[in-house]
Length: 272
Ligand SMILES: C[S@@+](CC[C@H](N)C(=O)[O-])C[C@H]1O[C@@H](n2cnc3c(N)ncnc32)[C@H](O)[C@@H]1O
Image 1: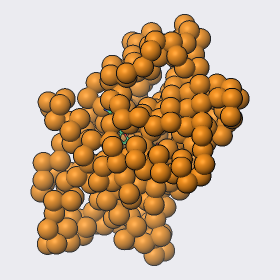
Image 2 (image 1 turned 30 degrees about the vertical axis):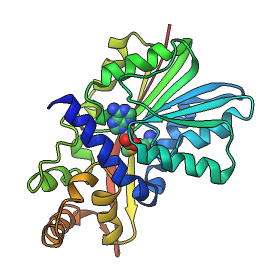
Image 3 (image 1 turned 30 degrees about the horizontal axis):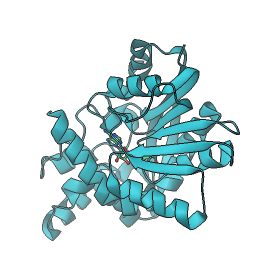
């Protein structure tokens, strides 16, 4: 796929998803986000970069950890996400978190600037994840740490049929490599290829709980990576894809809601 097209699909797709993202994903992603924060272990006074920061689900906890003597910069390709994060920062009066629109593969930042960099569930969407990791490696100080999470193996992600269901109607071309980084040692290998040392890997299983079918469909179609394609559906197609998606997650019904399995991979490394 043409990387420029992928970036455009990502940028404008996440612009559409931005207003819905936290409603459908904040609680569900909490276990993997907390583990990423523990791995990053941001300390008071540190300077931290959050790549593909979205609405700041991870940026704001880091801002709290580094305190008023530290700072965090969140960067994301989507203007909508950046605007959302800035609004939250303003509302909560958080002065040590800044947000800038930036491509993970081309960080407009000086070398060796940050004590740590992290990327929560962003690398699957980047055309060249190794280049994004190399950029994170470049901007952390020698000895600095980088932590990244991605979705795990397709077979362990119960919501995965969403891509083929949507692609059958609209060529969504979201991210051709989506589950690639979650296979085996793929992400760890990328860290090694970039030159990180002290690499650790962890695989995390979780359940994504949705109280109703509407919530499960909202997460799938409105608040996530296929939001751009889904926005083009008319009412008839929307009803069809909803029915197909609900059939694909039927095995995970839990009372009136759903408990959909999800798997994540978390890798950390240090710049030598
Ligand atoms: C699933 S969201 C994750 C947001 C946040 N890190 C979190 O964990 O809640 C994926 C984010 O990746 C961003 N993204 C996609 N491609 C990107 C790129 N090339 N550079 C920077 N951000 C990108 C999207 O705009 C979106 O905000």
